[in-house]
Amino acid sequence: MAMEEPIRLGVRLKGRDLETFRKNLVNPPCTPEGIELVRMAQETARKIRFR
Image (cartoon, rainbow, N blue to C red; front, side):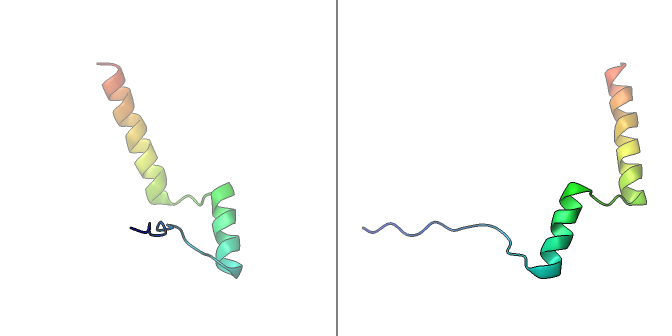
């Protein structure tokens, strides 16, 4: 029985898409919704921690 080649997962980006992806890895964009989500998570963590 011959072994099959493993499936390789991943995305192949080129050109401007690759540049944008790399830029966002270094300095991720922040949205108002994201800021609110972090604020809510911090508030919840404080409530749980001090019970």
